[in-house]
Length: 84
Image (cartoon, rainbow, N blue to C red; front, side):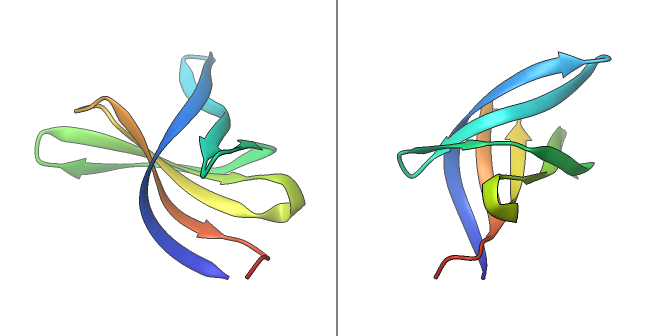
């Protein structure tokens, strides 16, 4: 099931070869471990460059995380989950 969100999330990240990589995030009171990053892109919003990451979690659920440097803050933009 596909859902759009604009939920703030806490994201644990690392730098790998000079690139930011999400490891896990807290959403709706639970921690979601990032199994893989399947996509990464940048979108300009005014002067800010928003960094988007498509990540896969447990069970194959896919999420779109966005880092907004103006906060700075992380947002969960979309989720594709098997649950109802």
